[in-house]
Length: 106
Image (cartoon, rainbow, N blue to C red):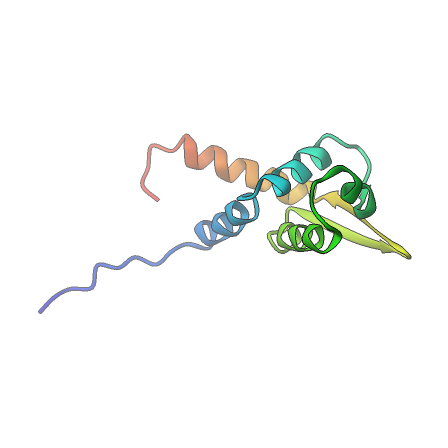
């Protein structure tokens, strides 16, 4: 009889997977870098002017970052402004630090 050696993935691992998926595109990394350097929020229309993507594509990138909890959006009709979710960004940095500096198994 074979024993089941499968492990249960922790919520931290699942959260890190969502974060890394969100960071897995150059446009999303650019957005995160830009927002992390700003003390204020950025309007999505400003990003459309800077990036080589259309409005609907940008919207999908922002949606992915928001789903991962890395950014937050606020509607100010007719605009949407986005900011880095600083609390979650700090948590993500701590998770990566632990991952890359860990001497222990996951």
